[in-house]
Amino acid sequence: MNASVLVINCGSSSVKYALIEADPKAPRLDGIAERLGSAEAQLKGNDSAGERFIKSLPGADHAEAISAILDSLEGRRPSAVGHRIVHGGEHFTEAALIDEHVIAAIETTAALAPLHNPANLVGVAATQKVFPSLPQVAVFDTAFHQTLPPRAYRYALPETLYHDHGIRRYGFHGTSHAFVSQRAGELSDRGTGGWLTAHLGNGCSTSAVWQNQSLDTSMGLTPLEGLVMGTRSGDVDPGLHAHLHRQLGWSLDEIDQVLNKQSGLLGLSGLTNDMREIEAAAEKGHTGASLALEVFGYRIAKSLAALSCALPRLDGVVFTGGIGENSPLIRRHVIGLLPHFGFSLDDAANEVTIRGKEGRLDNAAPNGPQVWVIPTDEEGRIAMETRHCLEACA
Ligand code: ADP
Image 1 (cartoon, rainbow, N blue to C red):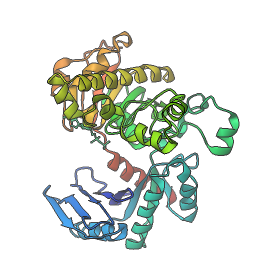
Image 2 (image 1 turned 90 degrees about the vertical axis):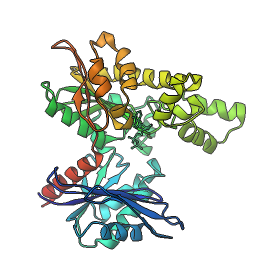
Image 3 (image 1 turned 45 degrees about the horizontal axis):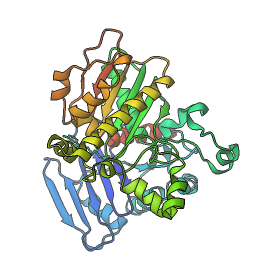
Image 4 (image 1 turned 45 degrees about the vertical axis):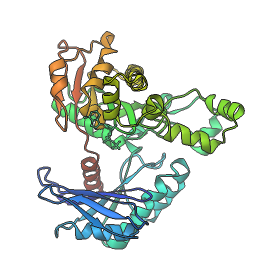
C-alpha cells in the first residue's frame, strides 16, 4: 500500500507530527505543536526544503493545532493517520484500526497510563474532527512486548493482582526496539537472531529480541522500571515507598513525583538530566556528573547481561536513542563492562559513529557478539505498521 501516513503523537499540551510517504527517500514534513491551551501555543516544523518555521497559535486546542499542521503540509495530503498510543494493555498485540471498540479498550487501559492514554485519545478525537473520512490506526508502545512469556512478564505477587487488575510487566518503547532489531537483522550477517537492544534517550529501556519477537524488556507495569533515565530512577527497592512514607512522611504523590521527575541523571548529578551537559561537567571534574555516568552505564550493562538469559543465542547489541546514537563514551563504558560475553569494541569506529549514522562498532571474533549503532525511527515504524494494518483490514 502506498499510503502517505500522518503520524501523530499527542501529549496533554502538545502534538508531534510527521507526514511519511511510502517511498523512504521522499522528504518528511515534521514538527511539533506545543504549549496548547495557552497564549504561547505555537507550531514549529520543518518544510520540504529542510527549513525551520514557527507559527504562533495563541490559545489553540488540539483540533486547532491539527488544522494548522494540515495547513503546513504544503498541499500534500495524508491518506491515513497513525497514532502513537502508549498503553495497549493485554488488549492489543498489534496495531488496530480505530473504531468505537478500540477507543473503549484504550479507555479501559487508562488506569495503567493515566498521563498518556487520555492525552493520546484527545489526539484521536481532534484528528477525527479534522479528517473525518481518513482511516485512523492506533500503534501501541506496548504491543511489541506482548510476546513476552509469563516468566518475564509476571511479578511474584498474589495471582489476583494479575488476573483482576492487570498488574504485570508490559514494556514500552516497542516501536523503537522493533525497528532497530529488525534493522540489525537486515544489516548483519547474523540475520534475525538474538539481539539485545538499548534505547537510550530521555526514557531508557533494554530489550531481548529473538527472531523479531521481544522475549524480555527492562520496563514493566509503567515506564519507571529498569534503567536509570533522564529524571526517572529506574529500579529501586520496592520497600523504598513504605520507608519514605514512614520515615519522612512523604505522600504517594510526592514519592511518585521524586522517582519520576527528580531522580535519574538529574538526581545523581544534582545538575541536569541532559547527557551532553553531564559528560561536559564530568570532563571538568564534577563529582556528581561522574557518578551519574558510572551508575547510568553500569545499570545498562547489568540489564543487558540479565536480559541475555532470555535469548537462545546472543548475536549482538544495538545502541539507539539520543544517547545510544551519539555518545561514544556511554557505549565504551557499557561494552567495557561486558568482556566475558566476548564483546570487543572497535574504538576508532565507536568514536566516529554519531549523529544519525548506522554502523558496526566491534572487532569481535567471527562467532563473538557484534555491536551496532542504529538510529531509531519510531515515526517510520508507526507509518509502516499503519500501512500493514490497513492492508490487513482491506
Ligand atoms: P527522547 O527520549 O525525548 O526522544 P532523545 O532520544 O532525543 O530523547 O535523547 C535525548 C538525550 O540524548 C539527552 O540526554 C541528550 O543529552 C542526549 N544526547 C543527544 N546528543 C548527544 C551527544 N552528542 N552526546 C551525548 N548525549 C547526547
